[in-house]
Length: 213
Image (cartoon, rainbow, N blue to C red; front, side):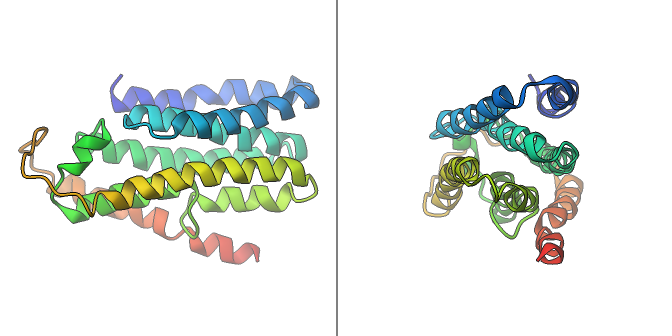
């Protein structure tokens, strides 16, 4: 699958199943499925080096958060899903423009500005505050505060994912290589400017969070 098809599977293809879950599913099964999704997504995504697998397991983990929100507030999961679509769109666009499929390819990128764009969006997808990806999880935490056991499982799985993302991102700044095995000679100036503007959307995630305090 290319990144366009991957984005469709990660976003558009989830709408119908999520709507069906929110309308017709038994709440006990919904909660159990949500907890399992969060845990399986976090554990399975640990130490993955393929960006497609990382996006897939991250999607499973986010489904756990959305399913839990359906239990408490049948409309709030749409807000979570909308922000998830935005962060996934920017993330897949970055991988597509920079021709990245594996983490080892990112190690070969010598331009720190390109790395910064990818890192910010990965950390936003993982829910690092105060980036945009943290905003829906913040809303979920406020909503699920009365169901503390469920919230603890969700936060724990999210922290595990975020720990790996953070370690993966910052480790590339300490590694150096001379062989650009997957280098591509491309004119990426226009794409770089566009991705920089899109990344600004991720960086302003602190503002909607401040309004909820």
